[in-house]
Figure: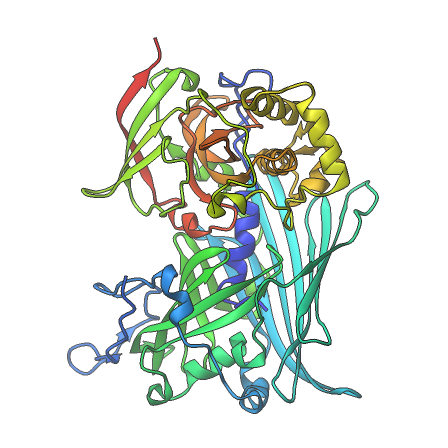
Length: 566
């Protein structure tokens, strides 16, 4: 159901967002503990001309926007026309475009996983059905240990009529949890999803049911329909050479709007033959992401890329081989940033120069984060004050804040067990400052530190009682909401110092924490037991934002100014 050009990147987010640098411990939240180191949517102007002399350039085109091409604007997604390929045409394309296709997944040029995508047509007593099966396998070394995730999705479409999506099933297995998301079409045409989760050694959590919040597209909007469109004569494309599709995202249990746009067509010489290739930019509004892919003349993806993450078309044997890479994403992703011996907790203000790709996150906490892009990228970070905090009144909350009060998939603040735990966490605290501090410290003690967990659900964390920064922060987010405080989980980097036998690595490591509304937004860190979080917390996105992946391995940060408390 997820576009093949986005699938590995979406699930990479789960692993990359779900690992943290562990060096700040609950016992010493302010110190450093040694840890063993092992625009405008401009239509394309047509095919690019061959190289001088009439000879096509060698090799695949680079999966990147051509110079001078403005990226797609997320705000304009609703304006893009829906993809609408006739169901009969999509079904007829299955024998060729639906053939099983394999891809290797790479981070920093190191193999970390593989995926496959295949389509088939099946006759049933109820009529013809078109099936899509996607499989995804990921193995990554993270801070000396290995994380593994295996995912299989099966989507079933009506092969006649309007080609409606009838059922979608995602089975996700990670180190400590098994999660099944099942979406089914209801008699009235709406869709309803159920989520089943079980953590290792625990009883299964109660079944959760959600009604789709937006209409879903069918076979005419599928990625097979998109591939068929790309394979056709460009004269058949619409004027903007861009199309929108409505996809079910099992990770968020919601409907995402995805847009694909042709940005260039060019002939290249590959394997001794001159062939046409199409470069496509794809964006999605949930998770917010941007990927550039290269399609061949048949409509198959040859390569997709975001930052240092790539998906490459390979044969089955090659795609599934070469695992066990030596790269450690926990160490390799640390952005060097020496603080010259200054304890992070004593810093009240940092002014940073950002050199390289940096997302445009929705900061919300505009006191802490001030990004100046008038000349390069300069980010000023100021520690939050805790004066004049207010207990939220649901009746007067702004709409853009109130949405962070409701229970949702993975943040089950209305779950009876979560509500009970929230009251326990708050204890006798009365004022907003007391409540925020109590919950932050409670979660820091309640959740046992481990880097081997990949639990996406607050109620599952409440049951399992172990995890890293993502488990701490998602549980804290749910507890705050249960107590009437709007909250959201965010991710980015925070100051870490990891020492091995011979040397230390100092800088900003990937981390997750919580933002809470108390008349204004402030950042708290339940993993490091900080309320407010220290000033080195640099937010790069919320859990539904994947744009920060472009920064992985590509962003350099320099301290321009530093203020320290006296």
